[in-house]
Image 1 (cartoon, rainbow, N blue to C red):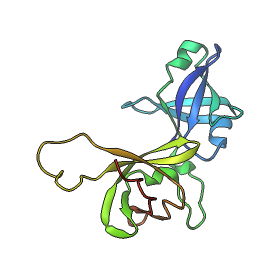
Image 2: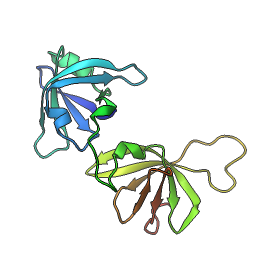
Image 3: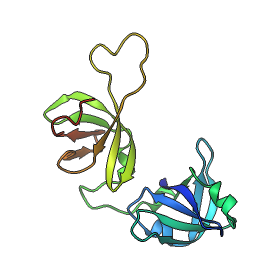
Length: 181
């Protein structure tokens, strides 16, 4: 299960900055076994030696076993940090893991027959944003393929008041203009 993405080297001693994709900071500060995965690569076992939050930023600085200089830390950029799926904390009723939203259909609550698109990613930018690949509009279903259109939707209760994991969809009540491209 992906819990973070390396975004930069930190200093000259092999530390690297990680953007967390998890709300559980102990995954980045508690030493132990983790996995690294390069884009389109197989996960590789790695040991987290230490980690600390960056004050005032949504980042952590990590030290991994075998990464001892800036060049090695720079090679981590773009790779994901993973933990076993069994490491998922138990949730209260009505709670869910943000990563479970990827792949869900996005519907309008005012008219549940209208499929807006599919959640393709989560972006942590102060507030969480859902990246949604929009469903083809009227007249787009046939003919030559067009590039996929994506939209960022703030993941806040006022706009996304309903998440139905069991049925595979989330419901939107978008403010005027949010879905206009």
